[in-house]
Length: 343
Ligand SMILES: NC(=O)c1ccc[n+]([C@@H]2O[C@H](COP(=O)([O-])OP(=O)(O)OC[C@H]3O[C@@H](n4cnc5c(N)ncnc54)[C@H](OP(=O)(O)O)[C@@H]3O)[C@@H](O)[C@H]2O)c1
Image 1 (cartoon, protein in one colour):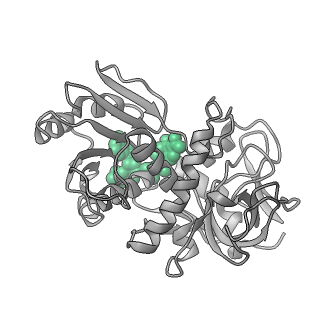
Image 2 (cartoon, helix red, strand yellow; image 1 turned 120 degrees about the vertical axis):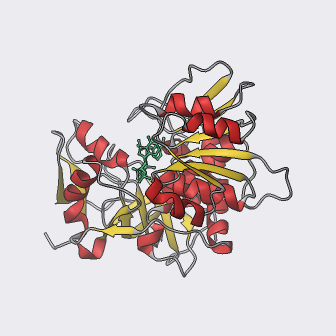
Image 3 (cartoon, helix red, strand yellow; image 1 turned 180 degrees about the horizontal axis):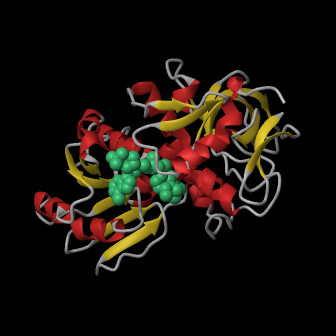
């Protein structure tokens, strides 16, 4: 099959390699579309090994069910989306076929295109880990609960975009930040309050609007000024921030917990961060895969507009340059496998 692999010196190439084979509990997916995340180019730049298949987010069709998958859990021909830890071995999303634990695939409604679906897994698993595993907030499928406020810092990031929608569908009061040009978009996907992330007074405005009582935040940027900004918006009595890059808040009483989407596999991780194996993260992710599938079927979850690069996997190097140059705004870099030229 054709796949985008690391060259070991910071670059990538499109190559023919062996198709991966299902291990215990896995399904083989014929990939139709893939979406790009910042981790993909960052992994490619730092990878010293040759031939690791890149890419984490994919959508496609199940073509084979491996050993030990409970009967009826998933079926051949099912439309699914999934997440794989790309760039660390011979299995990755930027390829024609990928293997994935069957229980961690998200079952897609017929109305969701593969191009839109490809952006869902990383963003939605991360959202679930942040809002439910870390912050213990109610899910869109939960029953009646007291209305709480949550700050999603950067609703216009790929992950924040879904976190805002899931939090709103759960009936929470959603506060977010974006550039002013995205204020309307943030309101359209359900944010109750939107602030410009740039001005220095924004955290104090959020603190004031929540009467100094805000306890829950998800920091979808987690670098430069945001650790301080998000901490400042929280109650003086303390609170919790789910962070997407590791940091510890300097504000007294504010607890931070680093969320890592790759931990859904329940295995120890060494790249891009050292992270211990956590079986409960796998167990939770099985529930989150079912939850995400159900939310997609029951609700209209809006996708970020796809920015389709023209030559499928052949365009990945251009997509990396585009993202690395900071050009991604309110769009998801996406590739269709069928657009890839023959090798
Ligand atoms: N730990 C994990 O498992 C995990 C999972 C997913 C992502 N991440 C990490 O999270 C980060 C974001 O990734 P992503 O793919 O979700 O986002 P993304 O789509 O790359 O985010 C781009 C958007 O971020 C917004 N932004 C930039 N600086 C900001 C700031 N200081 N405050 C608020 N918003 C800001 C911009 O919004 P405007 O267009 O409105 O200006 C921009 O459109 C990356 O570092 C990524 O590696 C980690």
